[in-house]
Length: 132
Image (cartoon, rainbow, N blue to C red; front, top):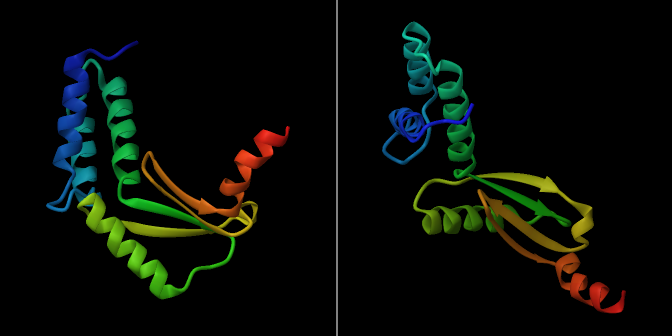
């Protein structure tokens, strides 16, 4: 079943109820919304919960930067990256570090749908395409 625009709007409003002043989801507020929905199920209960979950996943990924690296950056570099990303996105950004040896050297940063990459692998890709 596809969701009507009204159901989509309700799910977005429910998500906004879970956000704090900085735009981060608060677990206690999420639980409150879910308890209210459980106590008062609507005709579109499952659909509304699915849409709420989809919005919650998207929203929570906006506050997380996944940093992939081939050689671990220094703690000061990580901290300055976190500060710059928080400034750029206008919210606190948490950083999750992941080693990725396929990068060869360099770094790849993913925040929500944005990807920033400066790695040996990304610089070699055009050469590989040209030669193949």
